[in-house]
Image (cartoon, rainbow, N blue to C red; front, side, top):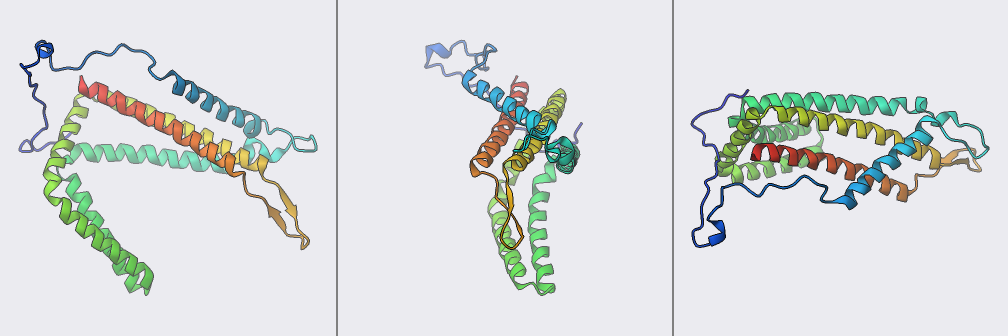
Length: 261
């Protein structure tokens, strides 16, 4: 699946048996097999409650619309009113899936030069940004670009000697993935799951904003709207971050389990 330079080292591990400890005499080089069970039931329950709460918000306010203060159905809160937000979420999710697929292909093809290439491109692009800004007469943008260019050069100089070790680790990881290609299916499954969660959460936050924001006209006839309750915003963003982290870490431990066997 990937093209690798055989001259590059591959990071491997060697089992060292400590003969001074009697309990290590039968050590086989692998960790103790863990029995499959739920090890964090409290946070698992919180995850289910979190997803159920967001789904309930979408079901009550995002799909059925709910009722206004006058008791009539508020058509603005139906799903038709959220089509633009849903389309944006779908477009960004599709772009993310496509970009991740292309990135994986590039990573598997050129792991030997990828780190150096990305580091050099960072320096070059920051320099181009500063040059364009100065040429356009944007002094502030040019100064900011020059500072970023200088910092990028310093960073590249300081880490350049460590690139061979990082490259060896990257090549090892790519070989592990190429030897267990089935794990990429799990990766795309979790990416699709994360995408579906993002769409659901996007509808929920727009629905909450629509139902909690009130607009009144001032004495000049100008409509003034109150912002969404900060408490609601905090809970919604906490909900989004918590679920995304669960999905991300589930993928991480799945990959680690496959590669570590």
